[in-house]
Image 1 (cartoon, helix red, strand yellow):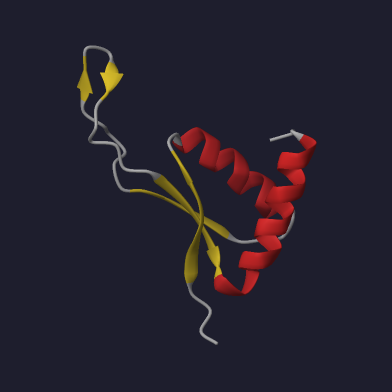
Image 2: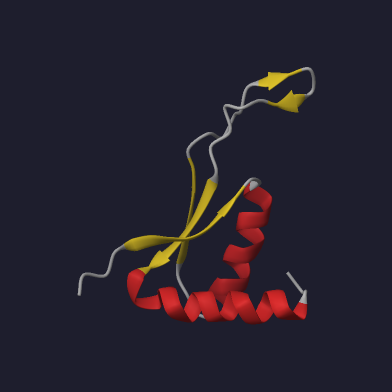
Length: 79
């Protein structure tokens, strides 16, 4: 099986993705954050529909482990 990056979760905010990235990395899982739209167009003080989700990715070999860690963390309401 090929070990390639896969999307674990999508975020509307890069800060949230970086927090989850930090949590997973402390658990020993390599993560990658991809933001295809780092500078959304601003109109009247808010982001417009030009939104592109921030992708948190992990290697396919660690996908299930990462999912389980996030599920447990969400259950604890700590992240």
